Amino acid sequence: MSKFSRRQLFTTGLYMAGGASGLAAATVLARRYGLVPPDCGGIYGPGETLSYAAHRLLARDSLAREFPRGMISNPPFPNQADPLGKEFERLRDGGFSGWRLAVDGMVARSASFSVADVQGFPQHSQITQLQCEEGWSYIAEWTGARLSHILDVVGALPRARYVVYNSFERDTWDSIDMADARHPQTFIAYAMNGEELPVKHGGPLRMRLPRQMGYKNIKYITRLTVTDSLKGFGKGMGSVGAEYGYAWYAGI
Amino acid sequence: MKQTKLTSYVTLTALHSRHSALVRVTHWITVFAFLALLISGVEILISHPRFYWGETGSSLTPPLFQLPIPSSRATVPTGYKYVLPDQNGWSRALHFEAAWLAVLAGLLYVVWGLFRGHFRRNLVPAGPDLSAASLWRVIAQHLRLQPAREDDRWSYNVLQRLTYLSVIFILFPLVIWTGLAMSPGIASAIPAAVSVLGGQQSARTIHFFISILLVLFVVVHIMMVCIGGFGKRMRAMITGRAATGKEQE
Image (cartoon, rainbow over all chains, first blue to last red; front, top):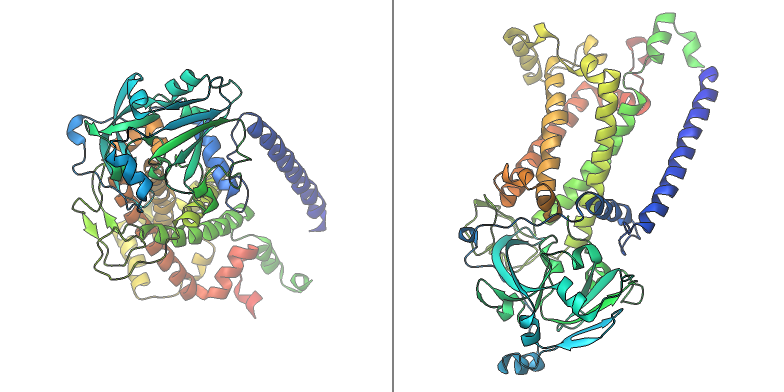
């Protein structure tokens, strides 16, 4: 048996060295081509990275399925929401005329838009599915402005890599990469099923991201920050959800 | 070494592997991944223990059926007065990471198996074994919970072969497919993968039933290992050596 063990040791060593250098090369390439998510650390990092990289390599520009009007779910399910406080009620009572969407960060012209300003941008609609990670889902028609259009209006810089978005809800923020931010179905939505977006569904403004799970579709959007690094935001994991164990990339 | 004292026949068989190294390694990776998938899958399931058919479904629409268990979400009408703690974050992360592990190990095993003739040699049943009489003999033997015959130590009987082939080439591909079909990213990239199944909620429901079949397989598999001799079978799958009569003494 000892006759084989030296050869086995050699081939095993060769495989291991090959595997290790392959992995190192893959890591360098993955970082360079933006295939590593901000929550790539920890024991679940490899799984998150594999899923994100696979989706970005194989389906970067794919379009979410759109459905015929007859398939719109009635009624759509509004998830549980915490009370939003007196300030929100005041804004709502004023028809959200005082609502502001601030856009800042790596942009040529920082701006602050009213809901009417957003409604004045080219209007788009989609009949797509919203899927919750819990297991339920519904189909609705969303109308809004393309995030890519807003990024063009403010002149997002070419080296920007992410858009961070904040909610009126305290400690609620998330971010997406440019593949999703520039995606034609990524909306700042203000209407649902032909009517003003109900507060329980995130009105007046909601991030609509049909290629990712419901929890990335943050409600009550107040601010967009264009950036090339997520390091300065929270714990640097890309979203407040990721800090609680919910994957930053939720296209899975 | 102990082996040198044995007869040449025993030395030969002792050196001959019952299970090759690749089978053993991928088997235990799959065991580990399956356990992680099962635990995290149950955890994800209790956040919405209702099932639907078609594209959509929620607590506002009638379910196909609902499991009589409590939920980790207050919005699900379960009839229970309490809500379980939300553990979906790590559960989902573990589920997908374990899925990657299982898929990669499975791919390695299947490619190796095709390349090396593992399936043809060890798993595809011989023609005569598929006759009704032969099948019935093996089924009757199993129903009487008789231990495996001596020659079954070195080979698989027809029932084992058909079961393993179904698990490897039907249940695993189906559970992976229905899992992927639930992903909004995959659904946008390959819409047909969802529509063929009847919708994303249908995919979820099928995923659930395939998982139950896989759990049933594992339960029976472990039962058969115990009946066949737990120590011997475990040794064969860990070290690759199958015990012969003489070696045991």
